[in-house]
Length: 244
Ligand SMILES: *Cc1c(COP(=O)(O)O)cnc(C)c1O
Image 1 (cartoon, rainbow, N blue to C red):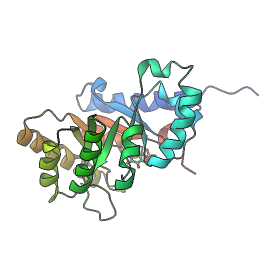
Image 2 (cartoon, rainbow, N blue to C red):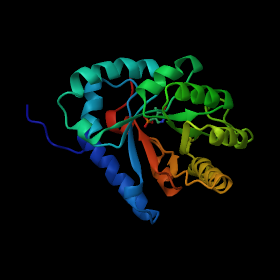
Image 3 (cartoon, helix red, strand yellow):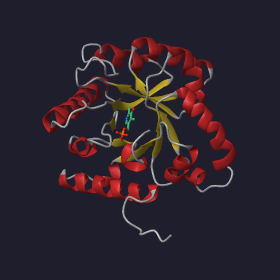
C-alpha cells in the first residue's frame, strides 16, 4: 500500500505541524519562536511513540511516577543504548500531581518537578533532595482558573509557597506552570494565562531572580498561551492523537 505523505500522518509530521503553528503564534505576538520550548506529553503513550518524538522536542512530560518508572526501564534497555536521542540528552519532567510517598522515586526518574503545589510537598522534596545531595529543578504550579478541581496552589497561598521554596537550598526554582480552564472561551483562557504571567512577574520582583519559565498551553490552547507569554507548551493529543 502506498501511503500519501500528508501532514499529520506520522509523529514527526505532527511535530513539524505543531512547531509551525508555534512559530506563527510567536510571530503574531512579536516574539522569538526560539524562546518557546516544546514538551511532548507522553501519558498513556508507548515507549516507541516516545522515542519517535524524543529527538524532535525539548522535553518529555509524564503525569504519573509509576507509569514513568515502567517506561524508563524499557527506555534504558531499548532506546538509550543505540540512539541519537541521548547525545542531545532529553529532559524528563513530571507534570502531574506528586504524592509525598513517591518523592524519592520521582527525584530519581525526573530531571525536574513541574507540579510543586504546596508547602508540605516543597519541604518534603527539599528533604529528599538534601539527603541525596542533589538539587531539584522545580516549577510552582498555580491554579489560575479558580476551578476547584484543578491542581495547583491558589492565588492566596502562592506568596507563602514562593517564600518557602526560595528558602530551600536544594530546590532550584525555574518558574511557574498552569493548566488553563477547559473551555473554548478565548477571553477566559487568556485571562488565566495572563494571570500566571503577572504572578510570575511579581515573583521576580519579590525574589530578584530571573524565574524565566512559564509552562502553559496544551493542544487546545497553546496558541493563546504563546500570545500571553508561554515559554513551554505541553502537547499530547496534537502529537500522538486522542488518548484512548
Ligand atoms: C495531559 C496533559 C497535557 C497535554 O494535553 P493535550 O490536550 O493532550 O495536549 C498538558 N499538561 C498537563 C498537565 C497534562 O496533564
